[in-house]
Length: 169
Image (cartoon, rainbow, N blue to C red; front, side, top):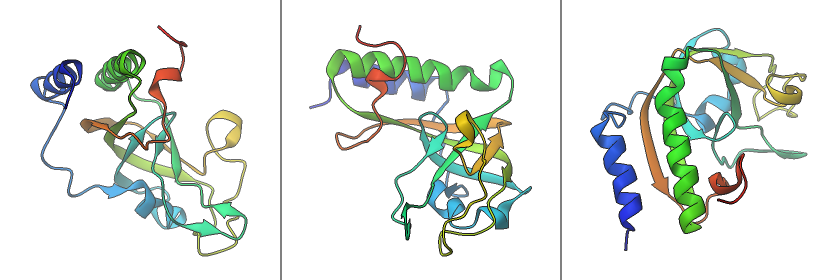
């Protein structure tokens, strides 16, 4: 059973035009992370979970752990970020109210910056320091546009929007 608040949230996203049909041309964060160096400086359209950057749970592993499949997002105008920020606030409120786990899926279009020298098939030396907080991200996109904003309920999601910034309601 879907809660009325979840339906209202989804209806608001669809009504505001944030859910577009053309996401087939975007690659996943996992696909992009397999070859960060190959996409350096190129305009990419990448789809993933918006949660402290752009992320996705990928199966690629290195000898020392998971290959870093996350991208720092920076730049862009306030107008570009407005719909994502509103969606994040709505999802945070709904997650706190219901205790459910959600994911905010977005497609980002812009050029990729990376210092990564190898793919996850190598020894996972992606060339830190990277981007973002403490240089922890192996790649970065200066956001030109977000599209295809979609909220999905996922009880197994590792992303906890209820505890992102503000604590309990």
